[in-house]
Amino acid sequence: MPILSKLCYAGFFLLLVFLVACNNQTEGKHEEKINTPAPEKLVKPLETIIGEPYKEQLFTKTNRLTRKMGLYNADNEEIIPPIYDEIFSGFVNPHYVVVVENGQYGLFDLKGNRIFESIYNGFVLAPADSSIISAYQFSKENWVLLKTNGERVFPEAYSKIIQLQKGFVVLQKEDLSSALANISGEPITGFDFSSMGGLNENSPDAEWYEENDVVASATSGLETIFINSKGEVVKR
Image (tube, rainbow, N blue to C red; front, top):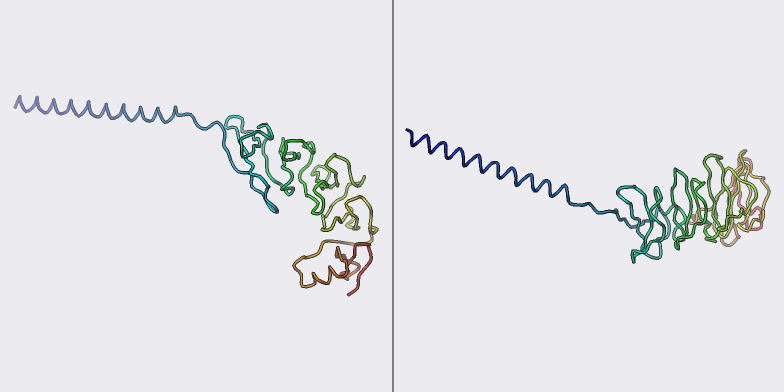
């Protein structure tokens, strides 16, 4: 019996030593995992929301500590420093990127030059001319049409600006009256329409639009009418 007790005690002691060793080894692995440094920056390709993709690969890098974001090219060269809350394509690709600062939007070109200060809430590129951009200000609930040098195409702001093909825009006032103009700042019609909009390029009437130089549709009373590039009503 004494020999058996000693053997039991020895076995228990060896089991205890084994468990302690396993626990230390597990803790060592856990400690090694915790102490392994995480990547300094999170890298993601810059994807377009809608429209044409960028002509070159662009990447955003987010600093894990500051949570700030910057823009880089495929050669890992910095285009925009990592000091912004967010960077995305907006509706101005493939020529520009939008940066976000304190909830406000600014605009940069793909060389890292600032185009607009961060005082807006959205941008839309003119289809016919990438140097003309409509910008929205939430605080004022209006749109302005801007050149990339910051000058306004029209001195006034509007409740809505609709970008059309072929270098035309629809300007809408607060009372919903609408007019046709071009992106050079020249009015085509007066604010004579209760509403105005673009054309459906996939419409069965697309060929008729082209033949008659139709650039916009409008509402006059209860009737839908069509306007050509000279501001004339085109009848079907």
